[in-house]
Image 1 (tube, rainbow, N blue to C red):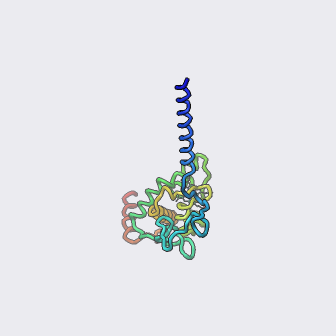
Image 2 (image 1 turned 90 degrees about the vertical axis):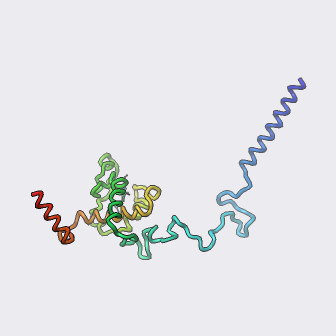
Image 3 (image 1 turned 45 degrees about the vertical axis):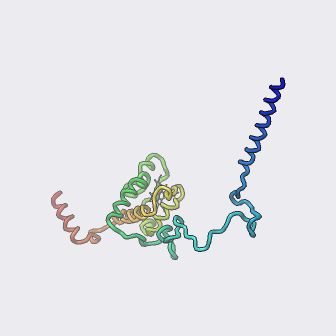
Length: 196
Ligand code: HEC
């Protein structure tokens, strides 16, 4: 009998100890998000950023490069060098990330749209032909209406590559022979002659 009550007592003590421990872990001595704090003069536990802090991923280093915006709005020039490699990279990324809806040629009739997803406007509509390259960068970065943002999936440099490629895609559908450099035109004519 004595033995049982001693065991019971021990168990009870153990329980008390445990519950006290649980409470401490639940309510830890730290400031939670937006919690008031008597420690600072302004009564807030959240502190302002030290002066001169630069955000690496929110446009701090080069705002135009990261946001696609300058003082006048969406940039109309690529903030990176336009090279063949950039466009090829853009084409590859576009085909992976965008063509499923926007189609390989940009007319908005991709496979997902054929299966019932809302159809985006064609990149060859006059409104989008007139849109600056920053407009496409912004749509990828922030999403557009029912299209979600690709910011977490496509790094900044690839977003510019894709935006540049979309501009090239637009050009490709509206180019005339006058747009083709003379030496390329020659080889095109030669190739055409071979086909005929
Ligand atoms: C899952 C389908 C889907 C994918 C993938 C997709 N988009 Fe879209 N996109 C849409 C739809 C739908 C709209 C129109 C949304 C609306 O109007 O609500 C749109 C709108 C846009 C617009 C704005 C067009 C306008 O009318 O002004 C741009 C630019 C754009 N997308 C570019 C891209 C690029 C670049 C990619 C690849 C990185 C991409 N989208 C991937 C479905 C998609």
